[in-house]
Image 1 (cartoon, rainbow, N blue to C red):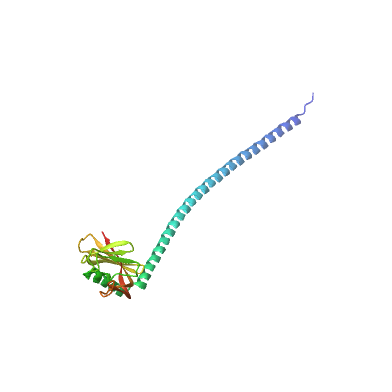
Image 2 (image 1 turned 30 degrees about the horizontal axis):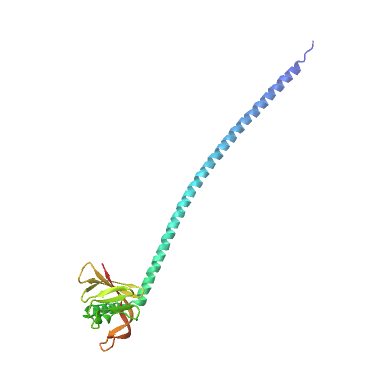
Length: 224
């Protein structure tokens, strides 16, 4: 019987080479797997980092937007306030001068000094519609009343005290006087430039129309 040892050796060598090749391929596959896993893990970490950064940026952006909106609102309010102050200053310069204040106060002081209701009427603004007056008889016996656009006010002599406050409002002068009778009360006089009445005892109604425009009393209100 004849054997072929060379063939056996060739088969064994082939198996050995095949095993080595498989081992190398397996090693490469394992290494590639670990590289891919490491790469995937790194990518996942990078993704998480980017998500965190995006979240922080979004929060910062929201905070910045809120702060910007707050500053815009404050700026808008400031602009409106400045505009209002400018209008008030403009109004003050346009309508009210020192002499106007002085004339308005002089009118009220004259009203305070009036001893009769007819004398007091001389200082009231009158255009035939805004103010009416009433008293018991032609001689001016009281109680006596002014009616300022529906607001009744009883006139009494020597009840108005000293000036305590003043301001301007839409071309008018507002004067606040203390009450002589009660320290907790006061009288508000709204002053305007207007025509009025002047006492004339020879007139059928006791008055003539005074066409001179000067500071007169448009309204009197008792304050508490």
